[in-house]
Image (cartoon, rainbow, N blue to C red; front, side, top):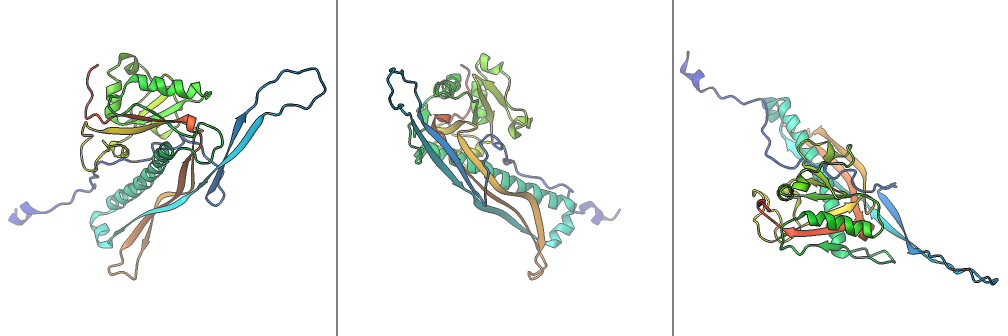
Length: 310
């Protein structure tokens, strides 16, 4: 056998992918709208009607106070793009195209998730600016110094149900928070009892539980960028110092609309570029906005690095 064959270079067929969030975890957990050219309006009825006692006299009725506010959402446009050389594709074959398609689709889905989380954070920070009736601010549960506890889930339900809502709540948390909650026997023995057709519910990798009427599920650490203990890109987990802001919401408390959703990669040659490279793209037109302050809770707890026994 010639010596040269001992040192033959081979390229394995599949392309390894660095770990990152695949996205799309929060799809269908918020209220969709009927969009017209990217503009959605959510009417919010307020005021309060009460019964009054009849006096027996012929007199005018005592009308109640009814208000109608309008929350307007305008979608914004986004795209992700990448170039690749025809020569690279010839070397790598279909696996390179599949890798690029998966990465671009994941980028688009992550952006949809990020738009929703940014809307929750903005709503919790600014409150409702277009509503007539109180409340217009978001309640914050916790001060950021304590570990996450099953009492937090109870408080979410107590406050939302106490306001008069009969809807279930969703609460997205880091994996390490789920591990901490599972230290409680009553929580660990609970099962997920929410909608089965949601993206996070169909994922076998997503941990999910329903406790006290709150559907609690995990999303990757990179989504938790709110708070002094926010995730730092390229690091494993959290430092254990500072706090994280997470959010719980009912489906009708946050509006989310995707007017244009093109997550399947387009691939076009560029003949006026040297070597005729390809440009690959995905696009998105989407936005989210807070509607009902009483249906959203900000949960601020310690950015723990690991779970401890309780």
